[in-house]
Amino acid sequence: MIDTYVAIDLETTGTNPAEDRIIEVGAAKVECGRVVSTFSTFVNPQISISPRITSLTGITDEDVAGAPVIADIIADMIAYTKDVPILGHNVIFDYSFIKKAAANSKLEYAKEGIDTLKIAQRILPDVPHKNLPALCEHFKIDPGKSHRALDDAISASKLYYALYAVNPEDEMFNKAMVLNYSVKKDSPITPAQKKYLTALAQYHNVAVTVPIDSMTKSQASRMIDGIIGQYGRIPVY
Image (cartoon, rainbow, N blue to C red; front, side, top):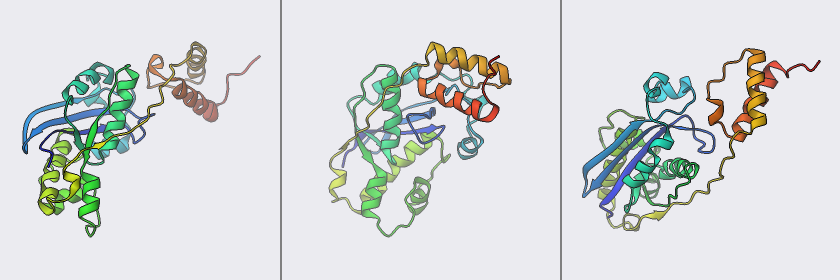
């Protein structure tokens, strides 16, 4: 089996790396089943965390208020995973968010990965639920704080060894897979959008929870359309 890797997990504001944002990073460097170091931090998404995500993760706006933004730590994340594959439960999800953040900072990020979800789907066909909490329960793995990044990363690593014990001869344990995710680079908000969105929000007395300067062109368009759809345009006299 592959015995040196970085187990990784992210908590995010949603499931779409093109639109949603990272709120917590957890990573553990593992050698021969032993955690030798960890990397863990909250991340300020610069938007409000929805009640649904807070209910799922326990992470609040107050938790991330003083945390670094992703651009401030993405280089450290890339360096931490250098020269080894990354491991995760549905690892392409985490990889896609990291890849997107790297691209936004003009950094390259290409990795091989170990996916405990894909392995479980292959060697545990009769187990009905294959999400991380269900498989931790199946193998009697202590999940720690479920849906918290570092604990989930370490749980995925323990799951990898539990799955290996079921069928150590399976070829999926011998080679990491190439991870592929195509990033569409965001264009920043245009000066015209910035001016109009600011005026629109002021006219309708709408609080904009995202720093306008940090918005992409597509995010600004959606926010403008949303305000117009709910409150109407600025009248022209």
